[in-house]
Length: 249
Image (cartoon, rainbow, N blue to C red):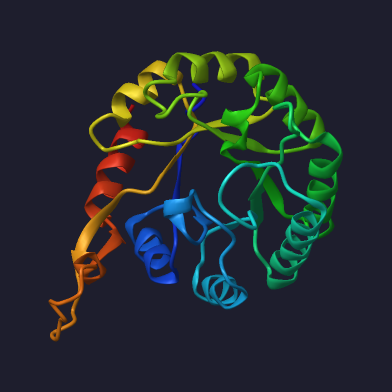
């Protein structure tokens, strides 16, 4: 009897400290970004270098020069190419990227250029949730396959992966092992079992963070932004609960 391959958990983090917490908790791959409240942007060179120095699991870096849409101008495209070169030279395992045209189709030419740069350094490439903003998910998947992406991060075109579970399952079936379809967005320890059953996923993406209290002793209570004294930190217990579901189902 052939043993079923273990499901893989990827965690999105916005700091080296959170990446190390995730690795210690048993996560198999890191997606590294900055500015998660904007949907994620490319972290600084120093952050990338430090993460690569300390992590022992695969490190994929988000290549996104700004928040907002996924229609980039020539200057932004040049920045993206330079960032991929830097990631390759730093020894990253992969990058996470994607570009659309104004009509909602995948920007084939520019995405091809980004994938080719990554290949120069033998890096893998994930197509990120620009996929969910495309005008036809199944055609976008075929484009990603033809371009050489190894996986697609998607919520099935919905706000959360649970809402898009039926579409995700259809994408996985249509992909037929030609590309990995990795559900993400709104995944929690409470709904992961349902998501596994509905989609038959092999890889899963999430953040799994909790609010941690700042260690600052002095606090200026005259300022409105008291949320600065609360930090979002990767939650080891949440990760372990998710891994238990991934490994047992």
